[in-house]
Length: 302
Image (tube, rainbow, N blue to C red; front, side, top):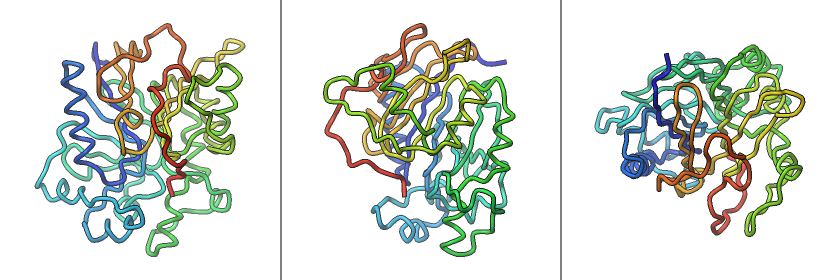
């Protein structure tokens, strides 16, 4: 049974910045006056076991090497964190656990594709991004930089596995479903200071998956930009609300929280102020986004 009330925090691409995310969640808990029950991360977490590995693989972005402290027991995550794989992970450590594993106390890798029941919620997930050349190829053990890169691409059997899911409360994907900007433009005019992302963002495989499974909510990352749009709703089709999260550089666009009663989200908000930006029964879309700030260069999560 799902709990009567649940506070879930979605987090964008962490890229190794675990300390900052934990500090943000401390502030969110104080603002909401309650504990965050679980944290869902949408990939590119970069939970490298050894600090030197992390520095070598992420030096191009100058990311911190913080997960080693949690793996070594120097620090403990305050809240249960569940994450999917992005296209930048310690794939060597994750390869033998396609159905998930616990990497450290309160740090859980969900796996490459499937469904988990978390705190009473049905959470579907698909790790990685789409690379057409490798979509039908078998997954190789990541023994080299090339095979490690290929491990960040989802495969056809994994997509098929997720396509069979039904009654999904939340779905986590790394790469956006294709067509979100066009869908938003059909329904809304962007608020002042907020521009639509380019139409090529995302992939059609994930979009087809979302359209078939009809999860109530989808959280995604990869493109390092906040976005909100509603899919479905025509001809009796179920409604899916999509929240795209920025990377963990500033909380206003990279933290998205949801408060649930049973299996239904009753209110939600961006950032860590605790301010509600959406309530059940209201529209979900561009108007639900946080106030525009100085834009970052559009990322691709590479």
